[in-house]
Amino acid sequence: MASVIVRGGVTGFAQEIEAGRHRLVADEPGEAGGTDAGASPYDLLLAALGACTSMTISMYARRKQWPLERVTVRLQHAKIHAQDCAECETKEGMLDRIEREISLTGPLSAEQRERLLEIANRCPVHRTLVSEIDIRTRLV
Image (cartoon, rainbow, N blue to C red; front, side, top):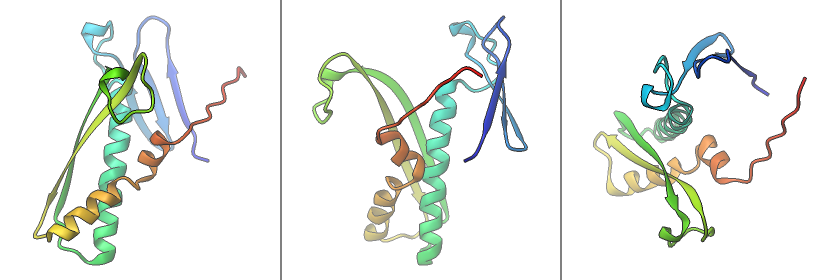
């Protein structure tokens, strides 16, 4: 199991993130009380989904030797009223909505493009986000 370590002080929102040998910074924008020193937690969540989506699509196209040249994934997150979502199970309160737009560059057929759209929903991060998640928290 991969380990990520996040450290932060108590005077603001800025956080130092260690993911293996990589270092990142998370923060909140100024209008939310942060110093905008890094991406927000939701930006990082969207980045994880976007990166996984692009990697999964690219890997599949390489295996099939399809003429995919570039993948661009644009994501947005919002809180919406559950009653405004006809296809959602939850009907009361608020829920999270992620809008994901995928642009595929290259001379792909309509069938290849459609298949790559299906493959996008198989990326591991997408599957995690739409599954039941069991987060166990303890003090150490």
